[in-house]
Image (tube, rainbow, N blue to C red):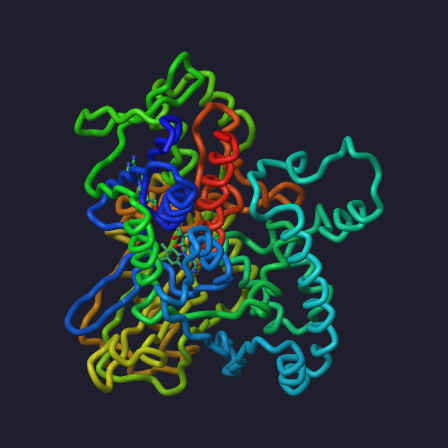
Length: 505
Ligand SMILES: Cc1cc2nc3c(=O)[nH]c(=O)nc-3n(C[C@H](O)[C@H](O)[C@H](O)COP(=O)(O)OP(=O)(O)OC[C@H]3O[C@@H](n4cnc5c(N)ncnc54)[C@H](O)[C@@H]3O)c2cc1C
């Protein structure tokens, strides 16, 4: 190993773990520093009173990203992780009592829609065709490379090329997800269900660019998967791989600042304990905005001004999670479920514009005993309930707000979710609020999914994985390209590592 291959990774979320494995597989000497006592960041676990809950992410899509990271070192993901494909993917409960299952086969789904909302089937097929194209455009121009804007995606100097022009046109820049969905899908309930793919990136369908309609095809094609052992098994598998490849993991080690020479070149890090660790390159898996504002010495430095000046960075949504241990399993639930709000426009307006919790929210449910009975005592259920909320505002006091909002959530589950006796079935309960998310995971304003994808033209772009402002700094995680959610942050870790490795060679 040459001397120029010492890399430090700041943060052991999924993005940091993926970067560490990829760098180690390419022959770099890697030290990963994580402030918390556990590795995996938001992909954490809660064990209590015989119940086991994934604390953060629960829906795993596009497992091929993980496969690629394992194949970097010639390993097979299946030797590290047992994945179960879930189909139907979601069960959806609507305000007026109807129930609709989202299945992965497009033709089967279209047939179901013919009966559920006559006239929706052809629109659904056409929407999935568009989604397929947008997925392909993302694969061709957006994924697996460090992108910070449209100029990184397309080589305009190469001149006019009809295929590229066609692909750019297909992105429908200037149009929103919600508007595009409704052009194809007239039924309000089906449109509400499809809108919800933008919740994977914590953004409003009304404000997000139409290119995000590609997420629907990513899910129908790649499937929804459950790792046995829970989502927690994903970071565990990555840590096992990294350990085999020689990565040094140091938990309980918070980084205080990046060492920056001449205001321009990163040469290592200094920990909160005062230790200096020199490195040829640093991958920061800490939030990209906080990396610049808090870890670069001197908030007014040229590098920070350049980062902040490039764009206004808006945090994605936050959320409240209730972890409910029940002495009963509700047979009408599937592994993943959505109990939808009465009006998506009202809901998203509260969360994303007014900045207040929605009075009638959508609740996402994970009932894991469907797939892994051991997550609850016999006959019980480890019910995970996630409700998206605005990112933290200065006046949000969640200690005060939680009891009232818990009540709103339980009432919604009792009525629209068809669980009238829910409260009497609770034998264990705990909660995670936006303030907890902010404090536990050191994110921007309690954001679950990094930066919002808002902006009908440029909303999909995040800070590039190779820092434009500081040499030897690379960014991985939900606030860096290509964005949040497990598959994307894993990809961001791979891109940061791949870019670093190419720069060195
Ligand atoms: C409640 C919830 C539900 C979710 N549901 C889903 C879902 O169903 N599907 C899905 O795909 N995604 C979901 N997500 C999003 C997904 O969890 C995240 O996008 C992803 O896990 C974030 O990974 P990351 O690499 O950005 O790192 P993070 O998980 O944010 O970890 C970053 C790590 O860096 C560490 N760190 C920060 N600063 C420092 C420092 N100075 N020194 C040392 N360490 C530092 C932090 O302690 C943290 O461990 C959910 C998230 C939450 C919270």
